[in-house]
Amino acid sequence: MQVALLVNAAAGRGRATGARGPVRAALAAAGLEVHELVATDRSAAEAAVRTVTGAVAAVVVLGGDGAAHAAVQGLAGTDTPLAVLPAGTGDDLALALGVPADPVEAARAAGTDLVAGRSARVDLGRTSTSDGDRWWATVLCCGFDTAWPGGSRSRWSPSATPPGTAVGCGCARPPTPRTGCWTSPSSAR
Image (cartoon, rainbow, N blue to C red; front, top):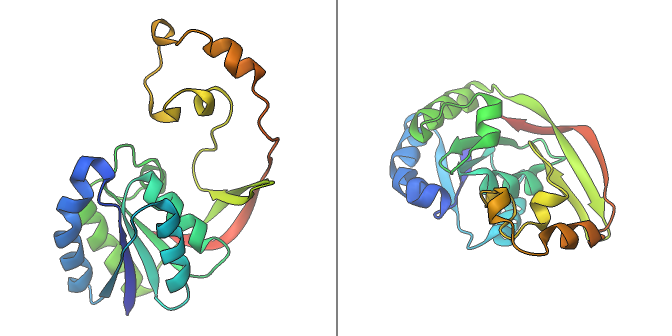
């Protein structure tokens, strides 16, 4: 059984890179043939996932929420399962799905489940704008945290508010997205 492994080398300040070898070994020990996807940025990761969808038994993501988000873009609406191995900073999706926090332990569990044919369907949200559709699995951010310099990655405090932020955020008129939740055939460990 062949799986594609997408690794975000920058995730978790190098945590994913350090776990790459042991994760590959854990997946192979479960009886999986691992094909690694190479991507230098999120767009390339989304494209890489789209190219293997349907050709592999599953896509396994070793990284954080950004890598998982990229995989969701390529897998939404397909029957190809997604296994998330947490190695990022927040790992919100893995936490929400109850995936073990250790990426190697998560790889063992994912390998066992994939070989046994076990997966679970999850609901995804879809946001449609003039730029196209984007899928999301945990949190949709809009408003202040997206207008803040650094986005949701910044630590916010009133004393750190740059001059003009309140005015700038109040005057911004981003496109009004349409949102909704759909049950997707995408699966997660």
